[in-house]
Image 1 (cartoon, rainbow, N blue to C red):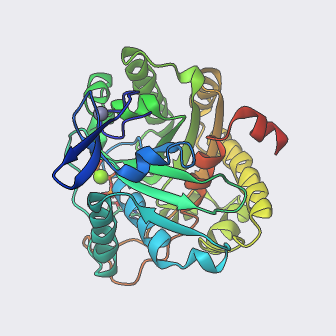
Image 2: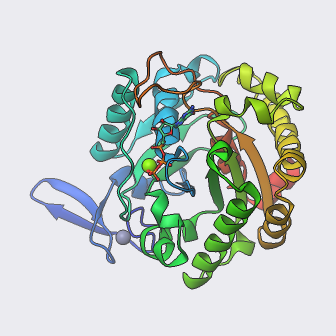
Length: 320
Ligand SMILES: Nc1nc2c(ncn2[C@@H]2O[C@H](COP(=O)(O)OP(=O)(O)OP(=O)(O)O)[C@@H](O)[C@H]2O)c(=O)[nH]1
Ligand SMILES: [Mg+2]
Ligand SMILES: [Zn+2]
């Protein structure tokens, strides 16, 4: 089983201290949630990661995702759906992030250290098997050099799908910076003894609310964003089809508008597959790092769907 703390494959040891039963990792000695161990097969882990430069929206994206999962009543669209945090620490993290966004406060820049996971179980999302999401968020500084990635973001090695989060309006030379990030990742994963050829790549364009000037020739993408986050969720098959069309459209956008064809060519060469999506976590720009209005997230569930889609065994994907 995958240890959520050190990401090694281990056999957890059952321990008993007075009346408290728990499972401990033999490698890192962390105590792992009981439900994680006991129902591992039923809710396999999915490593949710975010790779991107400083300030490109990684932490805000995760916070918004927690907000949407806990506040936007997705159970209205999905019969029997619910989420559950598997330990107290994860519940505290989710609650703190939701409260912060509700109060209009944005997170500080994330410190550079190896992150502790936020462990959230998703149950009864239509068309997807149940799973346990392990969220890892670290500083963008960890992705500026391969050696830093090895030290602070080795969790990426265990991700079936690697997620690049890019805020293109904050890049001065988009094609070069995109290629650099990919290059750093490929060196880092090599140094970690991993293989990109076993991984899928998902490119997420963040802060879509700031991208209007880039999207003038893409009315379908603009419409897709306008419809928010929950539109179409009642029909997941249709939603996934649309998500695939959006991915194809963003691939063209990457090639033609961003002129990042070398990034695209290299990504297609090195990864099992490359998909794209676009999100706006906040829906609008904050003023002086405070939110003046309630957040209006746009399409923030799409990366999660892609991660779940790409975690399916190959035969299930083929069947789809
Ligand atoms: N307009 C707009 N701004 C956003 C959005 N998401 C994040 N931001 C802005 O970007 C800033 C940085 O976002 P973070 O999520 O903290 O960035 P990060 O990638 O975690 O940065 P590091 O932790 O330093 O690596 C926020 O403080 C917001 O001002 C969005 O959806 N729209
Ligand atoms: Mg951060
Ligand atoms: Zn461990």
